[in-house]
Structures are given as structure tokens and as C-alpha cells.
Length: 123
Image (cartoon, rainbow, N blue to C red; front, top):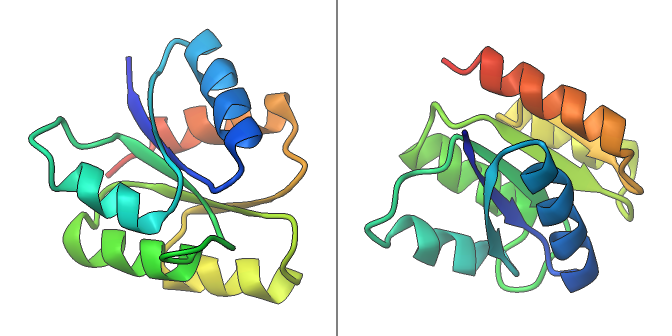
């Protein structure tokens, strides 16, 4: 069972992702923005096996989240998600270290495949 950190300011999407990921057999920790994710990472908890982050959030956007994880936790795979930004923004997320990018609305089957692929190829 893997631990997945989901970072998104949309509470409905966070709870939906939690439900999908828990049905897949994963544990899920939720954060409403990037600053909260950093706080979670500074708590004495097991580090997540995977991070899913929205790109547009208050407090700390997705690019800042990716930079934080690449700097402090370089082996944790990241999925960047966005529905509002142009495709070039997701491309930039990939160049900064996200191992996968997905456009909202997310499809459960595509999310499941991407999560399992990244967990299997985790460095």
C-alpha cells in the first residue's frame, strides 16, 4: 500500500481523488495548498510515495510545489494536474520535474494507470 499526497485547493476534487485512490488500495493525505503540503512534509510522518499537485493554488502554486519536492525529496514522483492553465504550463511542470502531467477533468482510469506506472518505476 502506497501513501499519496494530494494537493489541490478544490475540496470536492481532493475528496474525489481520495476516494478513487483509496479504492485502488492507497492511503491518502490531503493538503489544500502547497504551504500545507510543506507543513505535512515537516511533520514526523512517513514520506509519501507519490505526490499529485494542482498547478493553480493560493499560498504556493504547483511550480513552487514541484521545485520544493525536487529540492528536498527528489525521488518522490509527482503528477501535475491543471484545468485552467495552457498546455505550455504543464509542459513547464514536466521540465521542472513532474514525472507526469494530466489535464482536468481527470478520468479515473487514466489517473489509475498513471499512478500505478509511476509507483512501479519509482527510483
